[in-house]
Image (cartoon, rainbow, N blue to C red; front, side, top):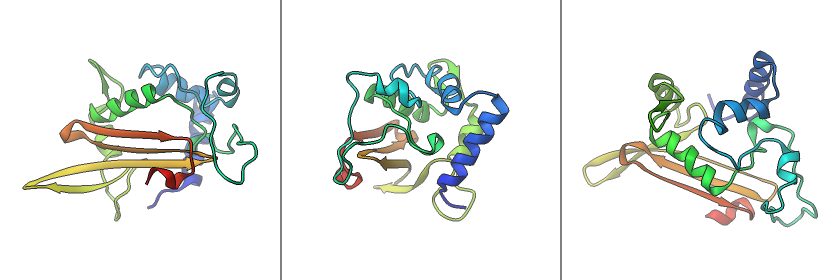
Length: 173
């Protein structure tokens, strides 16, 4: 059991087929809208019309493509403010304010590592030691076409970090 872009694209296709709406609309109604992520979209045409959108920078691309072949594995555009809303969703174990978007049992399944390795449903992780205290760390990073994101969170410490950049993937390190 390992991270697989093909697996996530298949999951997106299944969601799209079952819901009878495009994956971009599923993300909008199931995640972005409930979390108050008003500057997030998986629709390249919507993003392309934004006059203040970020442009990726990477040597070898004269024009960075806005449309990616797999929306389920990338192609989601969001602001730093919206990334914080998504981070809070994870830190609060699926709750937004007093509303539960993902019940705690499913949140725990998403953040457990039932198979060998440190990867589960969309998140990797491990345990860090601070003095005598073990703290679970979760992470997911992504990159492509001159953009990237490093995302880390520590629910028991109520601490998280999201870094968005429009440079080659190694720039964050």
